[in-house]
Length: 235
Length: 287
Image (tube, rainbow over all chains, first blue to last red; front, side, top):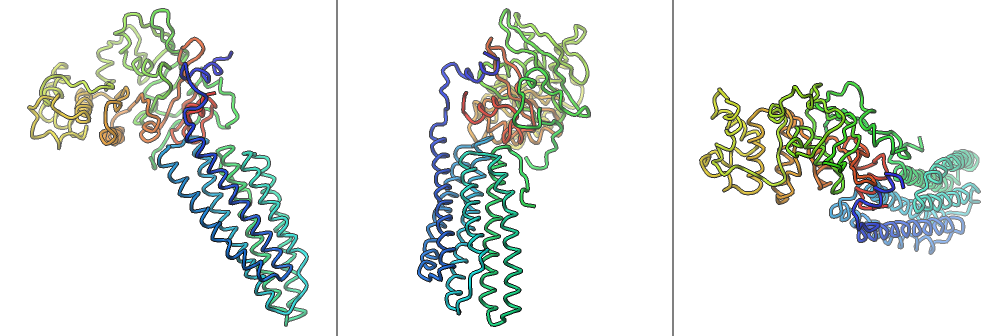
């Protein structure tokens, strides 16, 4: 047995594996809540994207209504984390994890707002004469959901590698957005009477692009949690 | 602790590290220009046949608060007491290695341990004022050292520096033991200051105090560090995190001898420690 192994096992002769079972349970519960929040946002995004493509006003309404649940859960998570920091004096990886979860919850809440904005655009688009949906927009919505899912997976696994992959893939969304920008400008030039629809689609793509940036912020949180280093992975 | 300049660097830069090197060579990565009050090199201390600490090398920066933390029995108090030769008072104690104080080997036979203790004062776990007046408690050391200046001024200055003057200025003749626990500890700090040391060693100075008195001592330490170098042993990790600039984590090996795991700026050690051992200890996870 090495000196360090021995030390690890004998900080106290009868030391249990951890002396902070209550804290660990609370930390695990907080993580579960953040994952649940991620699932809610992923679901909202999928429905907002579908409402946009299918011109489904009622589905868009549901997304708007359900956002209060996202907001409530985010507030509850933040209050819980604040209480844990105040009462449990977390250190090292524990404090990094709580800060990462706090920030991730805030990013998820904002992503929920983007889903609501897309739902509103779906309703506005549905009120206008129909124009073909640009193919890049549902593609962006799909990539965003995959990215969000992968970021939450990286958070669960505290995987620096997975988090970096999420951040690198953000370029895909940026390219799709640039393409939407070109196509909507072209649409406005060719068919000025469709300028309103083109603008709505451009805004929807913009929200998705911004949502992708928020996902990379979560990736950065995971890298911080895993390494203790703060890096800008979406320069 | 914002605005505090920290002269030492983390032992190792990256988290996935070989922690074994920190055990014997801690401090070696610190920048050479650090103004070190103490330099410990390969310090091992025995009590008879029992090795209390092994091969500790580190440097203590001037005018900073350095905290020693670690589990019971890891030797942090032993290391602290070796800094002013208090272990000399234990007949079976033996020290190998070198401890330099301002560049001088304090265990050199030519060095007078009494002079060492005058320059390097100590405050203990339990407040231990003499059963004398507040004034005489503070004046005791200077009188013993045949102080020839204005004693009243020295007593007042010491009590002011210990943040006790306003509370006791009208009752200097009262017995030191009549003060509250926190006041008694500040009286002991005033007593240590009165002999004009440049280092104050503190061995769990707040463990017998309530939270408010504890915070007052920590605040006092912060004020004192502009004039003194402070080394504190504490079981209270929050105290080390709140009050110190640099923290050293010690633990014990298979033979129960304590050793240094890592020493780093406090903010670094408590947010991203280099060693898994440190991480496990400060987060309460063992193994």
